[in-house]
Length: 434
Image (cartoon, rainbow, N blue to C red):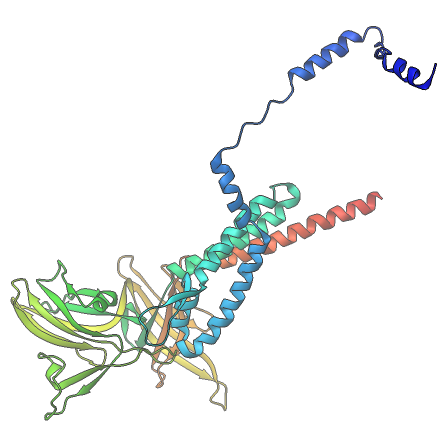
């Protein structure tokens, strides 16, 4: 038989039979095969379009590249904002660079501006979302990942705490002379228009108009007042001067000190050592539409502007915004200690009396450097003093989330210790077993 015939014969051979199963096990093997066929997994259900659409967004926010970009933008923002404080001042630089979603730029004198760089709120918010997304994508809550979880939770809480501090905290000052008592603190930058009903000398009713409404230069109607106010002019920063008798320039107002004064607008102040001194020209109009005249109100004027209407006496005053308290603080003694034989300050301290009528509390407290008074959710720090050493200036901070940074640092430190300790113990046990 030739080679071709042998190949043809080989193709015609029957297929080999499978080896016979051992006796007594054929039925069991058949049952096992049937059981495997019965429990074969079904096809997975098709995923929804919404889930598929969210996956790219989740991968983007959880990516490590986004973390690097946010950290880089944050470094540039801090460097740029620090340099900008030279020209803009601390408060304006904080608002434009760190308390905003975008930094805007426009030509000098132009009325339009365009966003040119992400601000602090945007960078910090994206970084917070990135941290949360990356945490849930890469880490599972297991025993060997407890330290990482604690560290990440601490970092997330630190970012949230800073946001809450920036949005909820308020700062004010309390200026007291020895023997003086006050039940309010004053803002350092914001003003308000106060309308005081002084008809009853034992009771003073105050209606305060915030600076934001004065900037709008509109009519102000308040149900507590029997008249309304027209804001004729408002100067965020101003200069008030005495008006010469032969001056051709019109007076600032026709009532009170107005006929003897001139008021001019001034550029806004941005440095830390000075602040704006606003002024406003207010017209008082009755409910029937009769004008009672115009008054000049300004922080340059030490005395309020008074007038009468319907047998009641009123005062107008533009002053720093006040926050009233249910308690009062009285300065008993201010001490300015120096090192012997020098003029170098050693310590500043204020001995104050804290009085709260609704609870009957009456106690004395000593406030000095690194020893503030914490009371009713506010902290009183020794900040400054009068040059004659008979007055004190206390910085008052209301920060509901003041404990958040401390708690966050504890969590981060504890997480690092737990994570390092877990790996160290595991490495030690492995070496002993070897």
